[in-house]
Image (cartoon, rainbow, N blue to C red):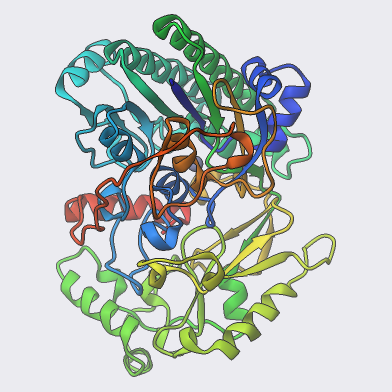
Length: 538
Ligand SMILES: [Zn+2]
């Protein structure tokens, strides 16, 4: 059995449906016709590090522990997350144990890499130059693609200066990654699985919606262009080429799975969650703070200030009364929250609401339900209908890292509303998304949606739709099942798309515990956190 998992990062089901109707995605159309096609639910939060971690391990975020690009310092060590800070066993280990070789090409959150039975090219969520193992593969791939990057990052490439040029880079990258996949297939004649992720569709979605859709509030400012569609077309074409190449090389029909880790919706409104929480008396900021001393000679003082502000009730009110001390800067630090008087705050992406640790709100079930009720009543800025579905962390997450999880998550029913968690003083909680500014959230005009796509065809796959509730966390077990394998302790496969299996062989891969130590130096970590913060990701 040859399995290809072709990841279209952030490919959105509604946009895909539109493009299928126009005949723009022939590879996907072919798979949909010959096999199973439908929606694939992302993790909650529907964010790249979390979703791909669930893809790789078959675990829910409470078990693998990755809820964001960086961790909430109140709930674990403050750090940039990576494959090393994740629990669980990536699916290549179970495959390797069963003697099945695999190649993983630019799949996010695979850095730091490990030796696998096959080829690993690390992806987004690590250094921009991928780490490649084994050495022979590294030398060959580097020789053919000396300037290979995991993804063309929009800020690094200054997308706003020339969007056409940037979109051109995204398309070029798709072809380059496609070629790396072909090289991996040629180097590995016994390959049982090739998994690849194309980040270009994600970035094109974040940046291209305002240019693509005339009803986007920022369309006038952004100008017109169908670059987003061009990138989707390029990925569809390269997926077709890879399926064809697998047929030629291996002399058999591969099982092809095209999937996305989450969807992508145009942003019409932004909801500043912390502004709402402050206005409704759940969150307070400090009036005095030493956080601007961060990364100066007095960094130690800033660290002590942060620690005391986050863990004690007496410190912030005391400091607030000391005249002459600096006020927090406009773009407040995490430790500028007055945790001694804060019962709820939003942190990271995807509407994660954490309840106050110092005030005891975290363990106050009555308060949690009261806040959930208030959040559920927030009206849609245009229609006045209740906007948010309010989910309980205790329903969503289970496992050793459940303590890192938010107590509540708000998901907009209208996904054109983007929930963000910055600590700036916004004049109001809702803002129409009319102005794209690279200084603010990268100038994005699109953001993640909870549903992605799944199309699968070939040996082992049934013809039909995907069952409701099919989720990315089930793909690890699905891949194993296609190889006649099962493993305990991970989420079950998507049975509805699979042909009945013969007897399964059980494998027990070694699961690693999350490492306590960081993989980045202090300087690197500070730089990465700063970048995430610009995005509203920290
Ligand atoms: Zn993604």
